[in-house]
Image (tube, rainbow, N blue to C red; front, side):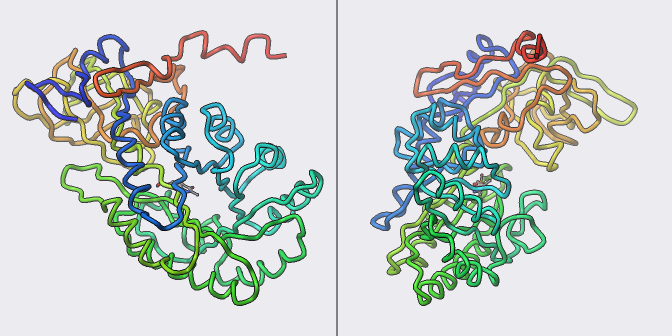
Length: 413
Ligand SMILES: *Cc1c(COP(=O)(O)O)cnc(C)c1O
Protein backbone atom coordinates (compact mmCIF):
# COMPACT_ATOMS: atom_id res chain seq x y z
CA UNK A 1 0.00 0.00 0.00
CA UNK A 2 1.10 3.54 -0.62
CA UNK A 3 -0.27 7.05 -0.73
CA UNK A 4 -0.58 8.57 -4.18
CA UNK A 5 -1.58 12.18 -4.16
CA UNK A 6 -2.66 11.73 -0.49
CA UNK A 7 -5.00 8.82 -1.34
CA UNK A 8 -4.19 5.32 -0.07
CA UNK A 9 -3.78 2.69 -2.78
CA UNK A 10 -3.50 -1.08 -2.63
CA UNK A 11 -1.75 -2.20 -5.81
CA UNK A 12 -3.45 -0.08 -8.50
CA UNK A 13 -6.73 0.51 -6.68
CA UNK A 14 -7.75 3.48 -4.52
CA UNK A 15 -9.11 1.98 -1.30
CA UNK A 16 -11.64 4.83 -1.06
CA UNK A 17 -13.34 3.47 -4.18
CA UNK A 18 -13.74 0.07 -2.53
CA UNK A 19 -15.07 1.61 0.69
CA UNK A 20 -17.61 3.61 -1.32
CA UNK A 21 -18.88 0.69 -3.39
CA UNK A 22 -18.43 -2.36 -1.13
CA UNK A 23 -19.30 -0.35 2.01
CA UNK A 24 -17.67 -0.70 5.42
CA UNK A 25 -16.55 -2.56 7.45
CA UNK A 26 -14.84 -4.54 4.74
CA UNK A 27 -11.69 -6.64 4.46
CA UNK A 28 -9.45 -6.00 1.45
CA UNK A 29 -6.62 -8.31 0.37
CA UNK A 30 -3.80 -7.86 -2.12
CA UNK A 31 -3.37 -10.86 -4.41
CA UNK A 32 0.05 -9.59 -5.46
CA UNK A 33 1.33 -9.44 -1.89
CA UNK A 34 -0.02 -12.91 -1.05
CA UNK A 35 1.67 -14.45 -4.09
CA UNK A 36 4.89 -12.60 -3.40
CA UNK A 37 5.03 -14.00 0.12
CA UNK A 38 4.18 -17.51 -1.02
CA UNK A 39 6.90 -17.35 -3.68
CA UNK A 40 9.40 -16.04 -1.15
CA UNK A 41 8.92 -19.31 0.73
CA UNK A 42 8.70 -21.52 -2.31
CA UNK A 43 11.68 -20.06 -4.19
CA UNK A 44 13.98 -19.84 -1.17
CA UNK A 45 14.04 -23.61 -0.75
CA UNK A 46 15.82 -23.85 -4.09
CA UNK A 47 16.68 -27.46 -4.89
CA UNK A 48 15.71 -28.82 -1.44
CA UNK A 49 12.56 -30.93 -1.93
CA UNK A 50 9.84 -28.97 -0.18
CA UNK A 51 6.14 -28.23 0.18
CA UNK A 52 4.77 -24.89 1.33
CA UNK A 53 1.44 -25.72 2.97
CA UNK A 54 -0.50 -22.55 3.66
CA UNK A 55 -2.20 -22.66 7.09
CA UNK A 56 -5.85 -22.24 6.15
CA UNK A 57 -6.91 -21.11 9.61
CA UNK A 58 -5.21 -17.74 9.09
CA UNK A 59 -7.67 -16.88 6.32
CA UNK A 60 -9.80 -19.48 4.58
CA UNK A 61 -11.51 -17.36 1.93
CA UNK A 62 -12.03 -19.51 -1.19
CA UNK A 63 -10.60 -16.88 -3.53
CA UNK A 64 -7.36 -16.78 -1.52
CA UNK A 65 -7.15 -20.56 -1.37
CA UNK A 66 -7.69 -20.75 -5.12
CA UNK A 67 -5.01 -18.15 -5.75
CA UNK A 68 -2.54 -20.14 -3.64
CA UNK A 69 -3.58 -23.52 -5.07
CA UNK A 70 -2.96 -22.20 -8.58
CA UNK A 71 0.47 -20.98 -7.49
CA UNK A 72 1.26 -24.54 -6.38
CA UNK A 73 0.69 -24.29 -2.63
CA UNK A 74 -0.28 -27.16 -0.39
CA UNK A 75 -2.46 -26.61 2.66
CA UNK A 76 -2.27 -27.16 6.40
CA UNK A 77 -5.76 -27.83 7.75
CA UNK A 78 -7.07 -28.23 11.29
CA UNK A 79 -10.69 -29.30 10.68
CA UNK A 80 -13.05 -31.03 8.29
CA UNK A 81 -14.46 -27.63 7.42
CA UNK A 82 -11.05 -26.45 6.27
CA UNK A 83 -10.61 -29.63 4.22
CA UNK A 84 -13.96 -28.91 2.57
CA UNK A 85 -12.86 -25.35 1.82
CA UNK A 86 -9.57 -26.43 0.26
CA UNK A 87 -11.26 -29.02 -1.96
CA UNK A 88 -13.93 -26.50 -2.99
CA UNK A 89 -11.16 -24.09 -3.97
CA UNK A 90 -9.52 -26.73 -6.18
CA UNK A 91 -6.65 -27.53 -3.81
CA UNK A 92 -4.77 -30.78 -4.40
CA UNK A 93 -5.58 -33.28 -1.60
CA UNK A 94 -2.16 -34.88 -2.05
CA UNK A 95 -0.62 -31.63 -0.78
CA UNK A 96 -2.71 -31.44 2.40
CA UNK A 97 -1.33 -31.93 5.90
CA UNK A 98 -3.89 -32.33 8.68
CA UNK A 99 -2.85 -30.88 12.07
CA UNK A 100 -4.71 -30.49 15.35
CA UNK A 101 -5.11 -32.21 18.72
CA UNK A 102 -8.77 -33.12 18.42
CA UNK A 103 -9.49 -34.73 15.06
CA UNK A 104 -12.86 -36.48 15.20
CA UNK A 105 -13.63 -39.85 13.66
CA UNK A 106 -15.73 -38.14 10.99
CA UNK A 107 -12.87 -35.78 10.13
CA UNK A 108 -10.35 -38.60 9.86
CA UNK A 109 -12.70 -40.56 7.59
CA UNK A 110 -13.28 -37.47 5.44
CA UNK A 111 -9.52 -36.95 5.11
CA UNK A 112 -8.85 -40.62 4.28
CA UNK A 113 -11.56 -40.51 1.62
CA UNK A 114 -10.10 -37.31 0.16
CA UNK A 115 -6.61 -38.86 0.04
CA UNK A 116 -4.68 -36.23 1.96
CA UNK A 117 -0.90 -36.47 2.18
CA UNK A 118 -0.38 -36.87 5.91
CA UNK A 119 -1.93 -36.69 9.35
CA UNK A 120 0.18 -34.78 11.87
CA UNK A 121 -0.79 -36.85 14.90
CA UNK A 122 -0.80 -35.39 18.36
CA UNK A 123 -1.57 -38.36 20.63
CA UNK A 124 -1.27 -42.13 20.84
CA UNK A 125 -5.04 -42.77 20.78
CA UNK A 126 -5.29 -40.66 17.63
CA UNK A 127 -2.69 -42.90 15.94
CA UNK A 128 -4.75 -45.92 16.98
CA UNK A 129 -7.95 -44.45 15.57
CA UNK A 130 -6.37 -43.50 12.24
CA UNK A 131 -4.91 -47.00 11.97
CA UNK A 132 -8.32 -48.58 12.62
CA UNK A 133 -10.15 -46.36 10.16
CA UNK A 134 -7.48 -46.91 7.49
CA UNK A 135 -7.72 -50.67 8.10
CA UNK A 136 -11.48 -50.57 7.61
CA UNK A 137 -10.93 -48.91 4.24
CA UNK A 138 -8.10 -51.23 3.25
CA UNK A 139 -5.65 -48.34 2.89
CA UNK A 140 -2.49 -47.15 4.58
CA UNK A 141 -2.50 -43.68 6.10
CA UNK A 142 0.68 -41.63 6.12
CA UNK A 143 1.38 -40.16 9.54
CA UNK A 144 3.89 -37.90 11.21
CA UNK A 145 3.99 -37.48 14.96
CA UNK A 146 3.88 -33.88 16.05
CA UNK A 147 6.51 -33.60 18.72
CA UNK A 148 6.72 -30.95 21.35
CA UNK A 149 10.38 -29.89 21.50
CA UNK A 150 9.96 -27.98 24.78
CA UNK A 151 11.37 -24.68 23.60
CA UNK A 152 10.13 -21.26 24.59
CA UNK A 153 8.84 -19.52 21.49
CA UNK A 154 8.85 -16.13 23.24
CA UNK A 155 5.51 -15.00 21.90
CA UNK A 156 2.04 -14.24 23.31
CA UNK A 157 0.97 -16.93 25.79
CA UNK A 158 -2.17 -17.79 23.80
CA UNK A 159 -0.22 -18.58 20.62
CA UNK A 160 2.82 -20.27 22.13
CA UNK A 161 2.58 -24.04 21.61
CA UNK A 162 5.98 -25.62 22.08
CA UNK A 163 6.29 -26.07 25.84
CA UNK A 164 5.40 -29.20 27.74
CA UNK A 165 2.64 -27.31 29.56
CA UNK A 166 0.84 -26.81 26.23
CA UNK A 167 -1.75 -29.21 24.86
CA UNK A 168 0.04 -29.69 21.54
CA UNK A 169 2.14 -32.58 20.32
CA UNK A 170 3.95 -35.36 22.15
CA UNK A 171 6.90 -34.77 24.43
CA UNK A 172 9.95 -35.21 22.22
CA UNK A 173 11.56 -37.31 24.95
CA UNK A 174 8.72 -39.85 24.69
CA UNK A 175 8.70 -39.87 20.89
CA UNK A 176 11.16 -42.76 20.30
CA UNK A 177 9.13 -45.20 22.40
CA UNK A 178 5.90 -44.01 20.80
CA UNK A 179 7.34 -44.58 17.32
CA UNK A 180 8.36 -48.07 18.48
CA UNK A 181 4.80 -48.82 19.54
CA UNK A 182 3.43 -47.64 16.19
CA UNK A 183 5.16 -50.63 14.61
CA UNK A 184 2.12 -52.55 15.89
CA UNK A 185 -0.17 -50.42 13.70
CA UNK A 186 0.07 -51.98 10.22
CA UNK A 187 -2.14 -49.48 8.40
CA UNK A 188 0.11 -46.52 9.13
CA UNK A 189 2.98 -45.31 6.97
CA UNK A 190 5.23 -43.75 9.58
CA UNK A 191 7.29 -41.47 7.40
CA UNK A 192 7.47 -38.08 9.06
CA UNK A 193 8.07 -35.96 12.12
CA UNK A 194 6.38 -32.61 12.60
CA UNK A 195 6.50 -29.68 14.99
CA UNK A 196 5.09 -26.18 15.32
CA UNK A 197 6.11 -24.11 18.32
CA UNK A 198 3.93 -21.03 18.07
CA UNK A 199 2.88 -18.02 16.08
CA UNK A 200 4.11 -14.45 15.55
CA UNK A 201 7.69 -15.57 16.29
CA UNK A 202 9.83 -12.47 16.02
CA UNK A 203 12.98 -14.34 16.92
CA UNK A 204 13.76 -17.34 14.69
CA UNK A 205 16.27 -18.72 17.23
CA UNK A 206 13.75 -20.90 19.14
CA UNK A 207 12.49 -22.31 15.83
CA UNK A 208 16.05 -23.25 14.86
CA UNK A 209 16.55 -24.82 18.26
CA UNK A 210 13.37 -26.85 17.75
CA UNK A 211 14.55 -27.86 14.27
CA UNK A 212 17.83 -29.13 15.68
CA UNK A 213 16.01 -31.20 18.30
CA UNK A 214 13.65 -32.62 15.70
CA UNK A 215 16.55 -33.50 13.38
CA UNK A 216 18.25 -35.22 16.31
CA UNK A 217 15.11 -37.29 16.80
CA UNK A 218 14.99 -38.16 13.09
CA UNK A 219 18.61 -39.40 13.22
CA UNK A 220 17.69 -41.60 16.15
CA UNK A 221 14.52 -42.93 14.50
CA UNK A 222 16.38 -43.70 11.29
CA UNK A 223 19.03 -45.53 13.28
CA UNK A 224 16.27 -47.73 14.71
CA UNK A 225 15.03 -48.57 11.25
CA UNK A 226 12.28 -46.03 10.63
CA UNK A 227 12.19 -44.76 7.06
CA UNK A 228 11.64 -41.09 7.89
CA UNK A 229 11.18 -39.26 4.60
CA UNK A 230 9.87 -35.86 5.58
CA UNK A 231 10.03 -33.26 8.30
CA UNK A 232 7.33 -30.64 8.86
CA UNK A 233 8.62 -27.54 10.60
CA UNK A 234 5.27 -25.79 11.05
CA UNK A 235 4.54 -22.10 10.56
CA UNK A 236 4.79 -19.22 12.94
CA UNK A 237 7.02 -16.61 11.30
CA UNK A 238 6.15 -13.12 12.55
CA UNK A 239 5.06 -10.10 10.57
CA UNK A 240 5.64 -6.44 11.41
CA UNK A 241 2.51 -4.93 12.96
CA UNK A 242 4.17 -1.66 13.98
CA UNK A 243 6.10 0.52 11.58
CA UNK A 244 9.19 0.16 13.77
CA UNK A 245 8.95 -3.67 14.00
CA UNK A 246 11.52 -5.62 12.03
CA UNK A 247 10.11 -9.05 11.25
CA UNK A 248 12.43 -11.80 10.03
CA UNK A 249 12.62 -11.96 6.24
CA UNK A 250 11.09 -15.09 4.74
CA UNK A 251 14.09 -15.77 2.49
CA UNK A 252 16.58 -15.54 5.37
CA UNK A 253 14.40 -17.75 7.57
CA UNK A 254 14.10 -20.41 4.88
CA UNK A 255 17.83 -20.09 4.24
CA UNK A 256 18.48 -21.02 7.88
CA UNK A 257 16.11 -23.99 7.69
CA UNK A 258 17.79 -25.17 4.48
CA UNK A 259 21.23 -25.01 6.00
CA UNK A 260 20.09 -27.19 8.89
CA UNK A 261 18.30 -29.89 6.89
CA UNK A 262 20.82 -30.00 4.03
CA UNK A 263 22.27 -33.37 3.11
CA UNK A 264 19.77 -35.47 5.03
CA UNK A 265 17.56 -36.46 2.12
CA UNK A 266 14.47 -35.06 3.80
CA UNK A 267 11.46 -33.51 2.08
CA UNK A 268 10.77 -30.33 4.07
CA UNK A 269 7.27 -29.05 4.79
CA UNK A 270 6.44 -25.65 6.23
CA UNK A 271 3.00 -24.37 7.26
CA UNK A 272 3.04 -20.56 7.13
CA UNK A 273 -0.21 -18.66 7.61
CA UNK A 274 0.24 -15.19 9.05
CA UNK A 275 3.43 -14.42 7.11
CA UNK A 276 1.66 -15.09 3.81
CA UNK A 277 -1.59 -13.16 4.30
CA UNK A 278 -1.18 -10.97 7.40
CA UNK A 279 0.31 -7.90 5.82
CA UNK A 280 -1.61 -8.45 2.59
CA UNK A 281 -4.91 -7.39 4.15
CA UNK A 282 -6.60 -4.38 5.75
CA UNK A 283 -9.94 -3.82 7.42
CA UNK A 284 -11.66 -0.69 6.15
CA UNK A 285 -13.88 1.04 8.66
CA UNK A 286 -15.71 4.35 8.64
CA UNK A 287 -15.65 6.92 11.43
CA UNK A 288 -19.17 7.37 12.86
CA UNK A 289 -18.63 9.80 15.72
CA UNK A 290 -16.08 11.39 17.95
CA UNK A 291 -16.66 12.02 21.59
CA UNK A 292 -14.82 13.00 24.71
CA UNK A 293 -15.42 11.73 28.22
CA UNK A 294 -13.88 13.39 31.25
CA UNK A 295 -10.65 11.51 30.63
CA UNK A 296 -10.51 10.33 27.07
CA UNK A 297 -11.12 11.09 23.47
CA UNK A 298 -12.88 8.38 21.45
CA UNK A 299 -13.16 7.74 17.75
CA UNK A 300 -16.19 5.50 17.22
CA UNK A 301 -16.05 3.48 14.00
CA UNK A 302 -18.38 1.01 12.27
CA UNK A 303 -15.93 -1.92 12.62
CA UNK A 304 -15.78 -3.74 15.95
CA UNK A 305 -14.38 -6.64 17.94
CA UNK A 306 -16.73 -9.02 16.13
CA UNK A 307 -14.93 -8.06 12.89
CA UNK A 308 -11.40 -8.03 14.30
CA UNK A 309 -10.94 -9.53 17.75
CA UNK A 310 -7.14 -9.46 17.91
CA UNK A 311 -6.86 -6.23 19.94
CA UNK A 312 -9.44 -7.49 22.47
CA UNK A 313 -8.14 -11.07 22.57
CA UNK A 314 -4.37 -10.61 22.49
CA UNK A 315 -3.95 -6.91 23.18
CA UNK A 316 -2.67 -6.83 19.61
CA UNK A 317 -1.49 -3.65 17.93
CA UNK A 318 -2.77 -2.77 14.46
CA UNK A 319 -1.52 0.34 12.70
CA UNK A 320 -4.42 2.61 11.70
CA UNK A 321 -4.16 5.07 8.82
CA UNK A 322 -6.71 7.24 7.03
CA UNK A 323 -7.55 6.54 3.39
CA UNK A 324 -7.05 10.24 2.70
CA UNK A 325 -4.23 12.26 4.20
CA UNK A 326 -5.74 15.58 5.21
CA UNK A 327 -2.85 17.04 7.16
CA UNK A 328 -5.08 18.03 10.09
CA UNK A 329 -2.39 17.25 12.65
CA UNK A 330 -2.26 14.60 15.35
CA UNK A 331 -4.65 13.35 18.02
CA UNK A 332 -4.45 10.78 20.81
CA UNK A 333 -7.54 8.57 20.99
CA UNK A 334 -9.12 5.21 21.63
CA UNK A 335 -10.56 3.78 18.42
CA UNK A 336 -13.64 1.79 19.42
CA UNK A 337 -16.53 -0.03 17.76
CA UNK A 338 -20.28 -0.19 18.41
CA UNK A 339 -20.24 -3.52 20.33
CA UNK A 340 -21.45 -3.38 23.93
CA UNK A 341 -18.22 -4.42 25.63
CA UNK A 342 -15.51 -2.22 27.07
CA UNK A 343 -13.11 -4.69 25.45
CA UNK A 344 -14.39 -3.58 22.06
CA UNK A 345 -11.47 -1.48 20.93
CA UNK A 346 -9.25 -1.48 17.87
CA UNK A 347 -6.63 0.80 19.40
CA UNK A 348 -6.01 2.44 22.75
CA UNK A 349 -4.23 5.66 23.58
CA UNK A 350 -3.21 5.84 19.95
CA UNK A 351 -1.46 8.83 18.52
CA UNK A 352 -2.61 9.11 14.95
CA UNK A 353 -3.65 11.55 12.26
CA UNK A 354 -6.71 13.56 13.18
CA UNK A 355 -9.86 12.11 11.60
CA UNK A 356 -13.47 13.25 11.39
CA UNK A 357 -16.84 11.50 11.05
CA UNK A 358 -17.25 10.14 7.53
CA UNK A 359 -13.53 9.47 7.05
CA UNK A 360 -12.54 5.90 6.26
CA UNK A 361 -9.64 4.23 8.09
CA UNK A 362 -7.52 1.25 7.15
CA UNK A 363 -6.78 -1.09 10.05
CA UNK A 364 -3.52 -2.55 8.77
CA UNK A 365 -2.03 -6.06 8.94
CA UNK A 366 -5.51 -7.58 9.23
CA UNK A 367 -5.21 -10.29 6.56
CA UNK A 368 -4.47 -13.09 9.05
CA UNK A 369 -6.73 -14.10 11.95
CA UNK A 370 -8.99 -11.17 11.10
CA UNK A 371 -12.04 -12.31 9.17
CA UNK A 372 -11.22 -15.89 10.21
CA UNK A 373 -11.90 -15.07 13.86
CA UNK A 374 -14.87 -12.80 13.20
CA UNK A 375 -18.32 -13.53 14.60
CA UNK A 376 -21.92 -12.37 14.60
CA UNK A 377 -21.75 -11.00 18.14
CA UNK A 378 -24.33 -8.26 18.73
CA UNK A 379 -26.17 -9.64 15.65
CA UNK A 380 -23.71 -7.96 13.34
CA UNK A 381 -23.39 -9.53 9.91
CA UNK A 382 -19.85 -10.47 9.07
CA UNK A 383 -17.97 -8.02 6.86
CA UNK A 384 -17.58 -8.22 3.10
CA UNK A 385 -14.22 -9.38 1.71
CA UNK A 386 -12.57 -7.94 -1.39
CA UNK A 387 -9.61 -9.15 -3.44
CA UNK A 388 -7.42 -6.66 -5.31
CA UNK A 389 -5.47 -7.87 -8.32
CA UNK A 390 -3.37 -5.14 -9.98
CA UNK A 391 -5.89 -2.51 -11.18
CA UNK A 392 -8.97 -4.61 -10.52
CA UNK A 393 -10.95 -5.57 -7.47
CA UNK A 394 -13.89 -7.83 -6.76
CA UNK A 395 -15.99 -8.93 -3.84
CA UNK A 396 -14.97 -12.44 -2.81
CA UNK A 397 -17.41 -12.70 0.07
CA UNK A 398 -20.67 -10.80 0.33
CA UNK A 399 -21.49 -8.92 3.48
CA UNK A 400 -23.85 -11.02 5.59
CA UNK A 401 -27.48 -9.88 5.57
CA UNK A 402 -30.07 -9.94 8.33
CA UNK A 403 -31.54 -13.03 6.65
CA UNK A 404 -28.14 -14.74 6.88
CA UNK A 405 -28.19 -14.11 10.62
CA UNK A 406 -31.41 -16.08 11.22
CA UNK A 407 -31.29 -18.62 8.38
CA UNK A 408 -30.54 -21.63 10.60
CA UNK A 409 -33.10 -20.69 13.20
CA UNK A 410 -36.14 -20.70 10.93
CA UNK A 411 -37.77 -24.15 11.14
CA UNK A 412 -34.59 -25.78 12.38
CA UNK A 413 -36.39 -29.13 12.64
C1 LIG B 1 -1.60 -21.91 13.41
C2 LIG B 1 -0.73 -22.96 12.85
C3 LIG B 1 0.11 -22.69 11.78
C4 LIG B 1 0.24 -21.30 11.17
O1 LIG B 1 0.81 -20.39 12.05
P1 LIG B 1 1.20 -18.93 11.53
O2 LIG B 1 1.73 -18.26 12.73
O3 LIG B 1 -0.05 -18.29 11.02
O4 LIG B 1 2.21 -19.09 10.45
C5 LIG B 1 0.85 -23.71 11.25
N1 LIG B 1 0.79 -24.96 11.76
C6 LIG B 1 -0.02 -25.28 12.80
C7 LIG B 1 -0.06 -26.65 13.30
C8 LIG B 1 -0.80 -24.29 13.38
O5 LIG B 1 -1.59 -24.59 14.41
